[in-house]
Image 1 (cartoon, rainbow, N blue to C red):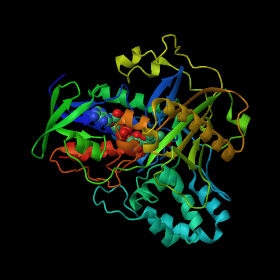
Image 2 (cartoon, protein in one colour; image 1 turned 90 degrees about the vertical axis):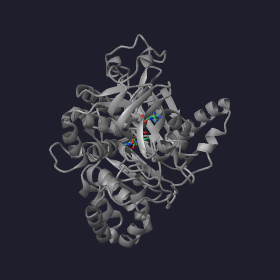
Image 3 (cartoon, helix red, strand yellow; image 1 turned 30 degrees about the vertical axis):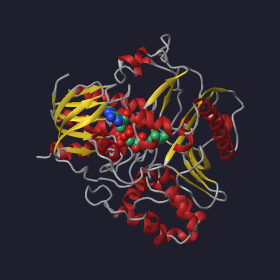
Image 4 (tube, rainbow, N blue to C red; image 1 turned 180 degrees about the vertical axis):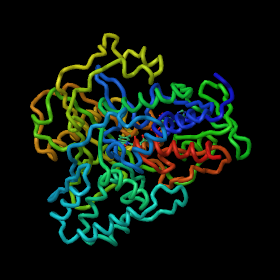
Length: 493
Ligand SMILES: Cc1cc2nc3c(=O)[nH]c(=O)nc-3n(C[C@H](O)[C@H](O)[C@H](O)COP(=O)(O)OP(=O)(O)OC[C@H]3O[C@@H](n4cnc5c(N)ncnc54)[C@H](O)[C@@H]3O)c2cc1C
């Protein structure tokens, strides 16, 4: 491997890929290092029992139609020179925030949510309009300042019905808060726009459509990607990073380094310990596949955010999973559904290491054609206790995965009001330990540090953060984070 690079990017998740493309487009000699056997990070994919699963992706937030100006999604298409149509986006039907006695529905048309609020919370509609105006006036993507402002406090100043506050917060907590029972006001503004004002879509064929596009674009621009290549440490000369040492012992030098692996994790690579406890907000996710259609079960919503009491407890749990709240996703309830769960070798080709292609988990007989079977996938997410999972023996871990999967599915049936009569074709579950193992995020805490580093600076001259701990979240947010950090630190001037 070439030993000196203009920029080394650590991690080929969404932010690392976004940064890598931007740098390669500008003619930089850029190397993207990923410890896993495939790209995507928290938004990756894998194969089990011949079925291809997305990790993470419930919804791509920030949906806007093509040619909408000044929105994150169209901005990132422009910055990466990727045509909007290439994402093959299918819009959500509608989503729901379900509390015990009331539900709010929303779709990709903001007035629909406003009307819902007018109907169920008529006295709050003026306050909601003022809240909306305040969000619009918030400079949420500015790279300066990182003081925490409580979104809950802000909401209280506009809305005097605590139930509406809880309902509006629930989806935003689940889709991006690193804070216990709260989130930073600027983060609130980002997520409010991404979820309520813009909306949800999903690429046809799931997250691998995005991964493939990004890897193709990166390589076309001359970027180099190394999979199964973990960085063991970042080499420092006082406050300057000079290069990285790989797990293999190889040393590579670079003029600049961008790290997408998180604040604590990056400091650890530099041999430094960050004081204070790392986040314990971890999640578990389950996936069940049936041979059925959503219509057969009368499941009409795309995403359901539910809470079983009037107050949301978005906090670390000592239990394996906390079923008091959660997110349920029916991927088939995007656009006109076409079956896409079957395994196709062709979608993998540019994105995985050779070792992964030889992995026995990938069946050699797999056919590249799509199956014609109608598949219905049910995905659920809950808060989960890292320590509870960590303390299990391997056997108990396997048993508890099965038990929690079943309990989560039953909770989903109860919330959705019905269940498929068909048998389960396939099922899987991942815990905070799975997230930690495959992405390196301490405690499997996907939203990272409570402190965000908006300008990417963490105390070194030429080593910067991008991604989750820089502060832009989700697929679109992480991509924009990579782009903006590359522009700001490596390409300006
Ligand atoms: C269960 C779950 C559900 C989600 N649902 C959604 C959703 O529906 N919609 C949405 O928009 N977002 C969702 N997200 C969030 C979204 O996935 C993240 O916000 C985004 O992908 C973060 O990207 P990133 O590049 O910052 O970090 P990551 O994706 O964490 O990328 C970091 C990369 O660095 C690699 N790495 C770590 N350490 C090293 C090392 N030492 N050397 C080399 N490489 C290393 C990791 O393997 C990883 O690939 C979800 C996440 C999860 C886990």
